[in-house]
Amino acid sequence: MSDMQTPEAGRWTGGIHLLPVRVYYEDTDFTGVVYYANYLKFLERGRTDALRTAGVSHNDLWQAEPRLGFAVRKIQVEYLVPARIDDALGVETRFIQARGARMTLAQRILRDGEVLVTAEVEAACIDADGRPRRLPAAVRDAFARLAGPF
Image (cartoon, rainbow, N blue to C red; front, side, top):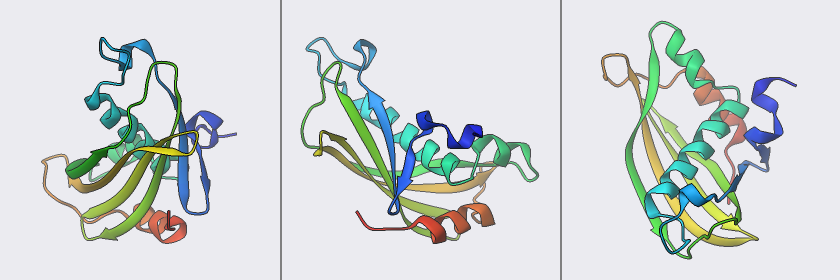
């Protein structure tokens, strides 16, 4: 099993990538509720592992010439229900669109099927100088292969 296919990296089913996440003490505020900014970390992990399990490695993109990476350009988040310490969550990620230097993804964080957080993320592909670059073929191919509805 390659490092891209480990259970810890989640799995793709019907166009949706699901990453399991456990809420630890470090993720919460003094009331035991997940601190709002930590949901962004969960979402980032979901996006990273969705790409990784689709065959797109951040490290490989950065080591190639030209060096490429992704920068979040825009994110819209709705916090619907709080998560608490020890909760077992699932981060769902779905590819929506890939065009030019941008990709758009829809994400949800769930607990036992209940939607806690929704997000739509637009990320731009940039080079080492921070300039936009067309999405690599591997990313466009992953979108074409795995795009699916929630």
